[in-house]
View 1 (cartoon, helix red, strand yellow):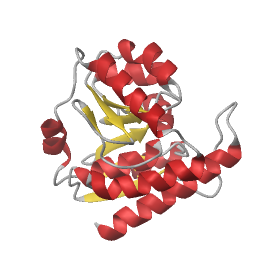
View 2: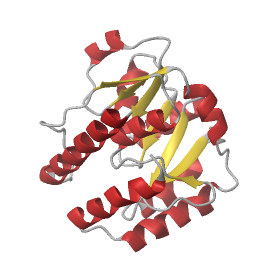
View 3: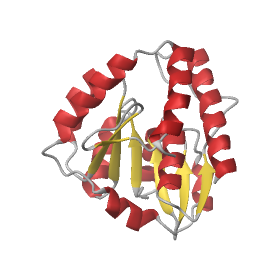
View 4: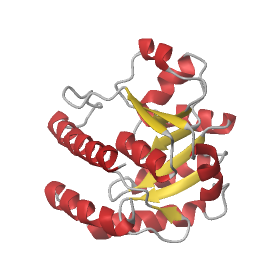
Length: 215
């Protein structure tokens, strides 16, 4: 999805949630400053990795029994909540999608072993960016939900899970399979409002459906 198409959806999202577009921009500028001397992933390498290959995007509602559904030939894209489950089964995801709102130490560990970390900036995670980003030692890429710039990209998507789907679509995966996505009965994170989580997953469902229908 190109940015002009995405920006229409983005404007709807920030209006719906009351988010601050200026804060989103400030966060993406911060992320750019933090990663500019780190091991930044070239998008062409991601394209060569994903294009023409099947991708499995794993959401936070992933269950241990979902391990049996993983295709060894597929590119494994894990939203941050799925990383811990994969590591417990000695499976290293190819790509991690994170806004640093989960078990970040597990993500850092996976990144040090070879997982590519796609780190997302938005208006209310600037403290997490400052704390965690310098601890990543492997290959990383920065993303934003508003206008991309420099080393900060926007492939579309709002939550970790649907950003993984948008990433796979952007880089022309031959097939995209979803596991661990429960849009109707979300798993709230400690200290988070479950109603906001449900609302976010409503948007995720809409975005994924629209994207896959157009693909």
